[in-house]
Length: 244
Image 1 (cartoon, one colour):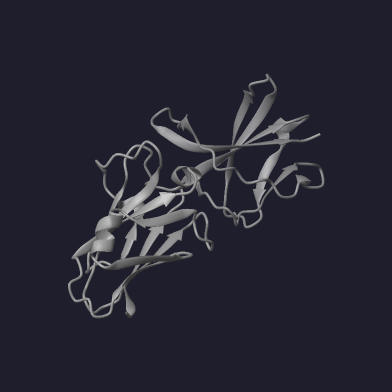
Image 2: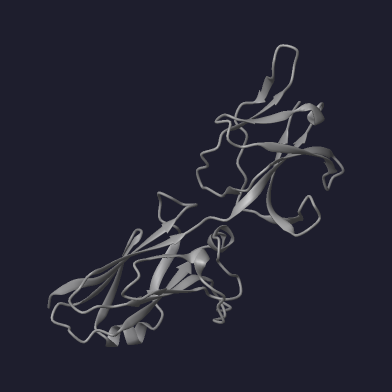
C-alpha cells in the first residue's frame, strides 16, 4: 500500500513565528475521514492529508479542527472567538486564507475545549494542493505605568525612532500607589519575541539620562479602555515598571 499527499496546509502565526503555535490539528469527523481512506500527519507547522495513490474517489472536501493547547492562543489571535468557531474555506481555487478575514460564525465552541478555527479544504484527485493559513496577532496599545520618585518627569524613547508615545497623566493603582501612564500612540501587534526596544529616561541639563535601557514588553493580557475622545474603545496592554 502506497500513500501520497493530496493536500498540505501550512499554519503561520505572527505571534509565535518562526515557531509553531500550540495548536493540534485533527479531522472534524475522524470516523468519516478514516472511512474515506485518508490519513492526517502534523509535522510542526505543516499538516499533510494522505491518501492511497490509487484512490481516485476522494471526497470533494474535508474539514479539520484546529484545537488550541492553551487558551492564550485564542486571546492572542485576531479574529479568534471565545463563543463560536471561525469557519475557513479553502476551495480548490484558493490557496491562502487569513483567520481575521473569516466572517461571523454560528458554530458554537464546545464547552470542554476551544478551537482556533475549522478549515474546509477542497481536494483534487491526482493533485497535491499546497495552502497556507495565516493567523495575525492581536494588536494593542502598550501602556506603561511608571511608579517611583519623579515618575511624572520620565519619557519613553524608541531606539528605531518609529513609535511615538503620549503621556496620559497619573492614575492610582489598586494599592493606592500613584503611577504615571505613558502609552504608545498607535497599537502594536503582540509578539512572543518583540522587535521593539524602548527605553525609559529622564530629561536633564545635559540630555536625557537613561533609567531603564530596555523596557519589558507586555504579557498576553488585554484590557478594554475608553478611547481618548470618549467614542469607542481601545485594546490596551498594561506594563508596570518602578524607578528609584
